[in-house]
Length: 115
Image 1 (cartoon, one colour):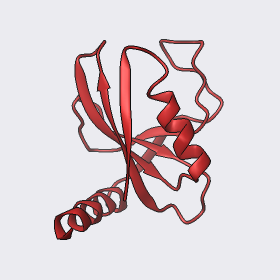
Image 2 (spheres, one colour; image 1 turned 180 degrees about the vertical axis):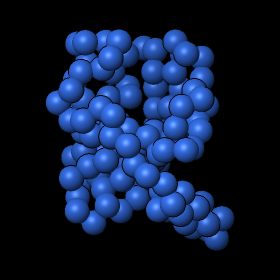
Image 3 (cartoon, rainbow, N blue to C red; image 1 turned 90 degrees about the horizontal axis):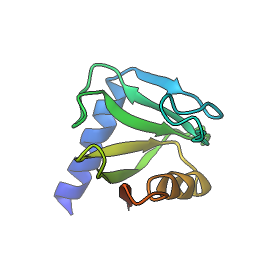
């Protein structure tokens, strides 16, 4: 259990020490897939790196406490990679939306891991 809490504290520190860039605000379309509309703010942590060589992805919800209490672990069969996405301040409803978003197609699957 100690390792689990250390993991979450490390994620909190990473987020706290990073600038959050929302490059796909709620209501906007995906740059390559115009039929996909973001239902929650989506972005990344500036000056970090993920498996896709971009910044670590974040979903930022509407809960004003901005707690980090979940991540999504994703497998993307089209890109042939995997990564995590940090959920920041997401309500239970928003967590469900994020989970559904990453499981809508046969090419991407994800699981929600709660703190």
